[in-house]
Length: 118
Image (cartoon, rainbow, N blue to C red; front, side, top):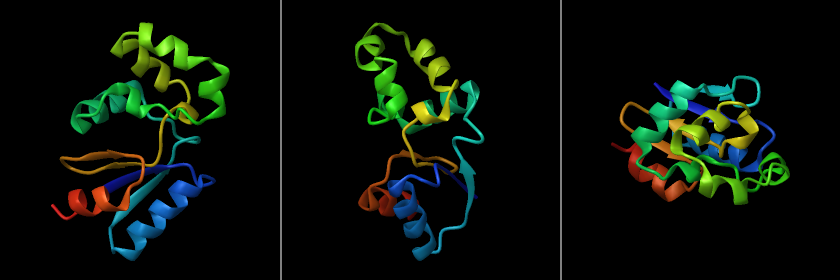
């Protein structure tokens, strides 16, 4: 089963959910604001994704900007960034799809199609 981590008010998340539904993908939905990912979850997802940790930050979000993270992240360790992400779901880029061997961050139909076919 696939875990779909999203923020229901986010237009990109709405598009991603529609794509999952239209493609007949079975998933469990989780509201990232109501049920923020834990440090351990984020660490597993980050390691499984193969992405740089900075890709997990919602750089367009108001919280990211108000905390001036563009300047702070370059001086932070990976562990510090994961701990920061685990404090508030609104810092985390979404949607996130967590499958057995894949983690996708953000929504791009082409990459989702390729990875979810496996």
